[in-house]
Image (cartoon, rainbow over the protein chains, first blue to last red):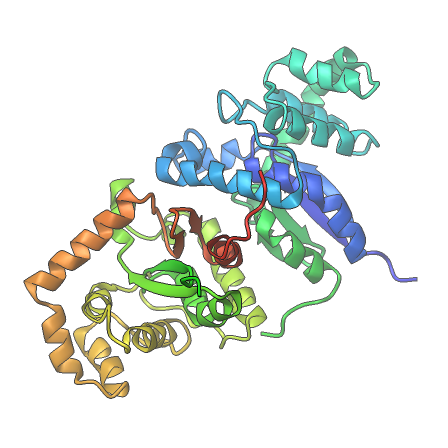
Length: 206
Length: 206
């Protein structure tokens, strides 16, 4: 039996369209016969390199206004709960991404990641403070305080820096981004279906 | 019989994704029972207001690299000819947009607009110089020299300024943009289907 193709899903907890992708990638990937590797990272350092000090949706107000409207429409079309806008936006995702990287090979990575997105974008809860992340971990039956402590280790901080540099070196400039085994890059929740098709060998002939 | 709903299609001749939308909107709109109002404009003045002196695809190289790759994939998936990258990019679209605005109510607006996009993005031809625009008009059986001269009138220049300010005041920040009769804004070629569905009354329940 052939090895199942893999799609890397690079996501950022402060990213609105990562929220949409996180909640639909499992079903879509299963239907396509593709396994997903969840790759948490931070987009802030990539944005900073191009001179952005906050989200482009804050820097460019007309774009930001339409993004929130579009996000509402998209969430409704996917049958996801109505969107709650994080305050402030973007949320500081450092604690959450450290935990996700610490849990990279753990079974709780996916439920934790989806719970963080839901807290932020469906339940109107903060995800920035350590206590917010601990509460999410606790709700999954983990020892949140212990996990957060382990996630703050120097080794794990290094892992985060390496992940961001890997993202940069592979051409990533935003989130969500999908990367196939052969290095094809698809940017944005809108490209999930095409990325899965590419991963499973169904490619348009140029 | 009920009046057919209308979708406004705001497009910019230098815009890569406007090229894709221009070549598929007629068939998609006919299938949806929606009539299309073609609205040529310039995005440059909107970009300038947010501090951009050129295309964001030039300002942000990683984003630009993936855009060209994505454009190739998208063109292939729609059965459009392979993409040729304009040199320089973006092309100066001032002459072409003046002609399009002059022809706003003419039957040749749509064939002219599609011919400009094809020249730029499928045939690797310049669209910037007056002679390039004249050649496209001539190829449609028009008197290109006369049309270009009429399009350079003060009244037509004013029409262009008014169109750009209308775009800005209605929340447009890029191209292509689709606007429905009730003011719903959809940005990007990826949203064409949703915009048509919205225009024809098929809306997700929030």
